[in-house]
Image (cartoon, rainbow, N blue to C red; front, side, top):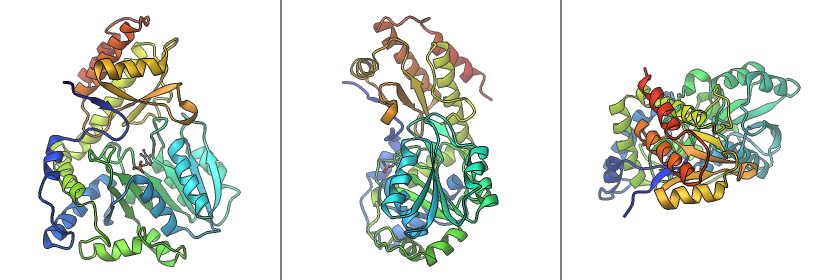
Length: 382
Ligand SMILES: *Cc1c(COP(=O)(O)O)cnc(C)c1O
């Protein structure tokens, strides 16, 4: 018998309260029970997005919601900018190219963030940009882009919509969609939202609704005007992920119980604990502190360690499950997820087991150094 310690950047562990909420008897999505639930969810999720706009619920993975944002807001042949700092930024590139948008790709080296200066310079010679797409938290590298600053640049230099992928950080990183000027913000269920995969959440600004009303790209299942129309009556156009929406209500209970600010602060604390631990073990980090993600940390392969064997061993011996590197980072890094239903005690546990694995692999380090450093950060929390 064992307990799997899932430290991936999605899917992530699901709280018992959420599991139990999802065990309720099913009811129809055309019933008054559902309408009441949807209306309640709509209000309670708004603080996570930092918006007064309605929250639309799609029965899909995050990628479908990214596609919905693109296809509803932009028409084929129109010019768009896609900022990509890793594998998930490349999703937006792929979606925009698939629909025949004229893509201006701003590709940043993996492990780096897109800064205001870089974006300002890139936008300078461009005109008639319909939308700028950007990943808030890049899950492949552990970069949190300075999305509020980028929004400011977009709106000061262009009339473009700013469309943001918040899939791996909403619920774990601050978001002020309305104040920052994000036009469409998307997230998914299985990352910081503590739910199984299969539900995505999306919100649209007034400006973006206007563009969507005028847009000519055909769509059916992902048509957001249809979602908006049905949402007026507390429903979705087709059968929603009813069970996951029960779970979402319990997620709101948990976040409200902890306090939204405290939830965000807990993620920042866990980020700092992991980073301090790795530094004390002389293990490198891919990203700078300035742009380090609060939900996932990308750790460089310790000098001389066979990463594949080490990760496999941690999983087999200690049931500690980290995610490997993606694309060009495969074999060079591993990813330590600390989002959603994850606490400082989980960081201490994972660092301790990592150290045990390093000892088993005869890696040269000062045993206990990582744990001590993480605990020091914890004890010095505000
Ligand atoms: C996981 C993820 C996605 C894709 O979500 P799916 O549910 O796998 O479709 C998109 N963007 C980011 C940043 C992600 O972390």
